[in-house]
Length: 520
Image (cartoon, rainbow, N blue to C red; front, top):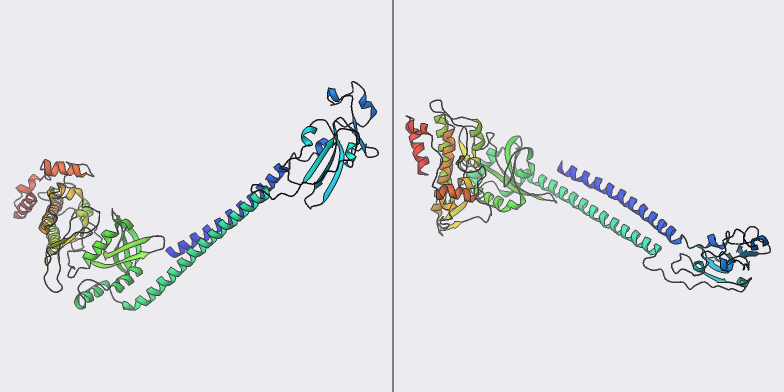
């Protein structure tokens, strides 16, 4: 579907581009014609060569006649020879004027040369007798002020000058070349991306067909994972199998969104899976979480089940996939908002979460042992609730590993920090010893104590239950800053309020829960 959408986008863009370029070219031609019209306007002297101002009868010499003759020229009219510019009533190629006689030679668009002469009226004659250097056609006009003087005028055409850069012809040529070059570049880019898209699609289908043989038909995810645990290294599925699964998964709908990216419900051969799509800027978190999940002997019933990880490049962007088991109850945060607990359900949730955290913190020795791992971002939103009412810990993008052989703490390069509301006091006041792994374990225990507090509020005892709230809800804003949490937790030394019913409950379990919360 994504490939089809990209193809439709390319075709639509290409059609719009061709249409706009055609309009631009027609507009260029129109501008060229318009420029030529304006440049040539006013350069043809025909409107002053004959007509008003030219006198063709003796009556016009009478004083007081209605003429346009200037006072100083009223007593003087010239007789001029006319050829090509003769008035309708001219006799013997002779015309009369109160202005000047002229002779003009000009070249038309076809290169033919014409020589003509006639009478020029007084108005504007001083300007018309001067040739313009910006004339569109080659021509020369000469004027004189005596009877039939234009018979002796022999004007010559000016030499041909090369067209200037800003002439109409050069301007039109430049615009045409620019439009053609832009069109060629755009078409080349479109063809390149279409070729690249088709090549990637062919490679995708080829790899998919080749990798189909890696997973036999009828194999479920549980079967594949069990095989990898018994016959493999215990670090998860082979990479080729992971890539094959990632390419075959179909996303169904968006089920969550966070600062790292999005979580989608997906299907692989009919089985539901969770697809965590990281933002590109969170590549370090994706790499770290993938690395932690693929640690030897990492798999545990109270750790979110890892299936596959892959990088999917679509040409325009890169998507980082992390595929895990899907749990329809969602996070503990969502579960507690709409579900109340009895004592048995509370203990089941708390115990399973503790088991998962304990497995993380425990180092397993051996040739293929497991390093000790601290979560560093434990909270109710990073704990999922399974169908059987137990918990599993997720989101290991900030986890740190401890190597007992070198006594070094492996800290991730990610710029992400833990959730401020759940940070331990030593993290807030920056007194945590970053080189001492036990300090990270203690910070996880503090966060786990806050999660227990959230569970306890939703447990019914004596018919009483509180609404779900986050820790420190009555002390800090909904999105507290470092300064807010530092002031409350470290400077004032406050902790979440403990309900009185937890102390008065006769069940010894509640006493233990209360004591644990207070110790954190």
